[in-house]
Length: 556
Image (cartoon, rainbow, N blue to C red; front, side):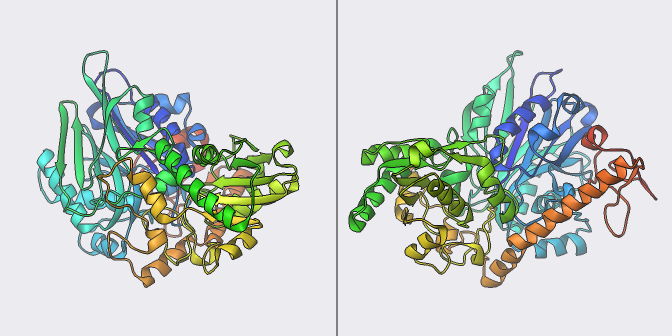
């Protein structure tokens, strides 16, 4: 679950970078591992700044001032396959043909065959394990087949149509062709969100924005937000907008987890207000809670949300049940979202840094905690213990999402843990409650969850609920592939990668403090920097001096 953004300003003399940076900060909830911006300036020259870290850490006034040009694209990254290498920060770049950069949200299925095609047939080198770089090279190779000195919009539509035939999975992409314009396209099932909007500028021309969520357009003063349709490609130049359905017709199935957890409540995705969908989830969950409490003979004194995502649902639930709603947890806003942190050890460590329980709201009470979902359970366990530590008599947990009991991974870009790490896997509801230390756990039913969202846009006939049902709308997912995905996403694998990255960082800092220049090594076979293709201004601004042996890296 990454965030993508593209911006084209139709007003000469105004650089796009500062506005892209502001937009990425509004998408920060979608990824906190890395971020990047590439802009296009005079004569089609690209300018790049990207690195591991949050938007506020990577970009400052100096780095923004060096990103020249009136159009650009940006990305915030949330890793799903375990790698947090700096080289996988997006956008990605290829110089042939025409100069292209691309940023992507989603995940491809069975990319091994595409990697083989890139190597054996297209003769294109893929430098990372990122699906985004693979998609970029598929797109570039398809454009290369035109053999033209200059391409037109029909050539671009054809190339993206071929990409959709070649690729299987979820993808919402924004791309930029040097000196030409910005491009957006979405997979035929529309699993990942992306849309566009425009505004009139001071020159009475129109600026255009593309983003993962509508909130970016709202904050920038853009209007007429439209979702990119499933299988559609959009080309935006200074002369106008062209749209075309280039993918084969398929079942439209947006990911329901966008509404449960990932998207901001003030966004509208595919015609559905995330805020109103969470209100409806609270109403539906209230009826389930009423029924279960009556069966168990239990009463509740207060409803308390687990910040922040569940607040809307918790408030509606409390109103429906005519119970007091209280903010029992105070959140430290300078700690990131725990679900998207790489590795369970880091997530658990940050829970108590992130939340503080107020005894005033818990002591001596039967508390109903409302959370958006219960996935791994370790975070829930910490929160429940915090409530009991400050005197809660009973802690009942209500989840806006159903339990994930089956062995079905999310293969479309959400970093679900392996089946052995799922708290509900192989457990009854009573056993889940025991595992996380709750007195009772109540789950939303899947039909109620779907109805909560679909009632706001009945034209959406189905949603991707594969983690609950094992039904994958794209096809091509079998047990062998799920096992492979689990091997990449298991927390013990991520912990090793995170530890390795920290050790590497510490060794560099020690070398620099010792007065010696740092030797940069990109891998066992070369001594090139790991950010290949464009000069990266982040290195210039933030890195100690480097010495490169052999041929200099193309990025330096």
